[in-house]
Every structure is written in structure tokens, then in C-alpha cells.
Image (cartoon, protein in one colour):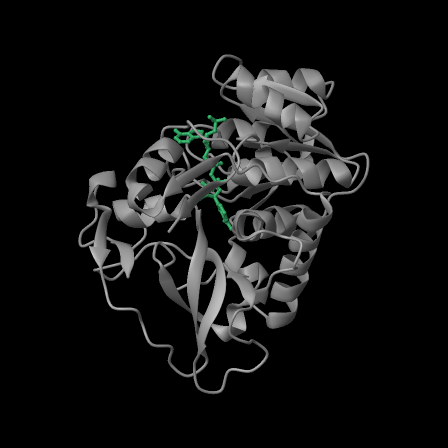
Length: 322
Ligand code: NDP
């Protein structure tokens, strides 16, 4: 099978196409024929060595595909089922193994591309808006990088919950997308001081929650945008990791809360995984959640896909097609 492999950490050039044997499913595993691969920022961190991985590595954890072969003891799935997962063991490939406990059946109304586009970023948006800081109607949320993969989905979910979304993006084109997704106000944080703008837009009150995936370049000002006892959910580091924080700042800035959440702790049980995936896939199927999948690349062009993502050239979901 064709697969993207990395032998050492580095720039996008370390992602190369390899010919590898199709893996055999072990006990509790399912072999899927991959139809669409979801590209996520975390693969860039692994490729660069920010997060550690054993080499050689087939990157990627998100994909949709059809069940090809069941490992010993697997029940509940049949060959030919359309399935998706965020826990694929190397999804940048034509075939991949998935623990059956992490596999979700895809509703028949969804295409494989839609399923791969919805799962990881959709469940991330879901846990942020429904669990980390359960948004209520009338509250205000600041969503950074709101035209990105998670950003567009989070903006839609927060708006549908009745919250006012103040979005930040880098370009006018991205601003339009954030607005279409439901953002009431959009700040071009590359041109305007978002802290000043947020204070102006909230009449000095500040926002109830900041969903910050940008990290290094936004973190300090994100804290300054919160109302007293507001919450900062720092869930990514697209611009780089944030430096250590002196906790006394949380006191002086208004008895603030801060959390550094990750999806895996919000889908840790089968019940929670089925709940979040079920919601997200169902909303995608009914059109309540609009998916943006205009960035599709052949598997062999994985390096270009990551280059474009890192270069802030993409909006919504990036997919690879084997
Ligand atoms: P995005 O599609 O959001 O891409 C990243 C975006 O970040 C860019 O488009 C860009 O938007 C913005 N950005 C701001 N500064 C920079 C910079 N210096 N370099 C690159 N990008 C920058 O990616 P995803 O939706 O896949 O992921 C968003 C973030 O959320 C990532 O940091 C990812 O690791 C994290 N994440 C965390 C999860 C969790 O559970 N903790 C789960 C999923 C994702 P703009 O041009 O508008 O500034």
C-alpha cells in the first residue's frame, strides 16, 4: 500500500511516500480501507518533534473508510461498513488499523469526506462549547483563528447555543467566513489590537470565555479580555507554545480560570465518544453544521497540505485522498 512515512523529524520534506505492506488487524483491531484522511495541526507538532513519536512513523489519527477486515474478538462491525475515527494508527495511508473501541459508524447520508472533516475538529468544538465552558445564551465568547478547522465549527456551535461570538482572523476573506459561521463581530488581529477591540465591543466588561488555539502570540492579551472569573481555554499553539505563567496573574487579572484541555480526555469513555461523535455527525448530516472541505490534496501531496496549513493559507478542513 502507499503511505506517507517519516523517518526523522524536520520540515515538510521529511513526509515521503512509501510502499509498505498492508497491516494485519490484531485482536480488537479493525483494518480499514481509507477513503479520506483528516489533516490536523497536531501532525505538524509530531513532524517537527515538538511532540515525541517513535520513528519511522505514519502520521495521522483521523480518517474515514470502509471496513476491510476484522481482528479477533471484534463485534458490532461488518466488512464494507463506512466508519470513521480520530484514533487511527497512522491515517496518512491507503489502509490503516483502528482499535474497534475507537471506531464510529458513519450515518448513510454522509460522504467519507464529510465524515473525515467532521470528526476531530467537530468533537473538539463540541467539548469546548458544551463541556470545558458550557456556553449559555447571552454569554460572549472570543474565538481565535475562527476561520480555521476547529474555529469555523466552534463559531457555529457557540452561535447556535445563543452566545455572541467575537472572532479573530488574519484576512478579510477569513473574516467573511467567520461571519457566515455566525460570528457577530470579527477582528483582524493582524491589523488591529484585539484586546482593545474586545474591550470596546463589550463596553469594558470583557468576555465570559476565550477559546485560544493560537497560543504564543495571543495568550497574554487573551487573559486581559476576560471578565472577572472568566475562563481561558488554551487548546492549541499554532503560533508557538506559551511561556510559563506566574499564577498570581490569575488573581490580579480577576480571579480567572485557565485550562489546557485536549480531546482525548473528553472522549475517554465509549459513552462520551459515541455522544460527541453522534452529535457532530448527525448535525453534519442534517446540515445544521456546515462543513468546509475545499482543501483536498492527493495523499502524495501531504507535505504541501501541511505547508499550506502552517502557512495560514487554508480555511476549514484539509483532507488527503488516498
Ligand atoms: P487551523 O485550521 O485553525 O489552522 C491554524 C490557524 O491558526 C491558521 O489558519 C491561522 O489562522 C491561525 N494562526 C495564528 N497564528 C498562526 C501562526 N503563527 N502560524 C500558523 N497559524 C497561525 O487548525 P486546526 O483547526 O486543525 O487546529 C487549530 C488549533 O487547535 C491547533 O493549534 C491545534 O493543535 C489545536 N487543536 C487542539 C485540540 C485539542 O483537543 N486540544 C484538538 C484539535 C486541534 P489565521 O490566519 O486566521 O490567523
